[in-house]
Length: 191
Image (cartoon, rainbow, N blue to C red; front, top):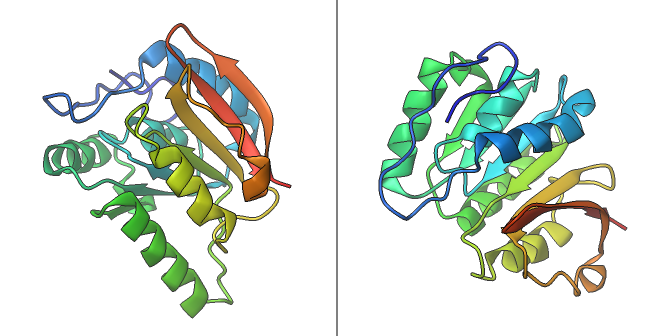
């Protein structure tokens, strides 16, 4: 696995051993970033279930102003921190070593404390274990959150059979979708 483009182009990334994480392949990552590349410069990016950090690091390499990574697996966190150092983007990164739902509470709390700063993410990438139902739990939290607004784009990497029928009830709509062989990216925004 490597960084596809930008300041860290071609640098190899470490990935955690075992089956706790499922890295997004370089081909799928390249397709994803080709879809959002014009909107990355200066954006604030949130990488949930970040694993090795490949998605958030790609965003930073391509010009994101800041990326926040939330991951709780110790092996993945070790790889994530080593990858941030190796790609020299650590100064624009924040790592929250927690369960994603707790990490979102921390971000929400910090955003409320510093209302003048109003931390709002331009992109949120959600890549939970497939068929775990965690994407729905995260979207339910985000539906009431001040860390997104109607212009924030949430990208969910999910299994090809994951059901998104209840998005509208949560206040979201699908703006586009990209299907691959065994998974897909679903882009959603607040209504």
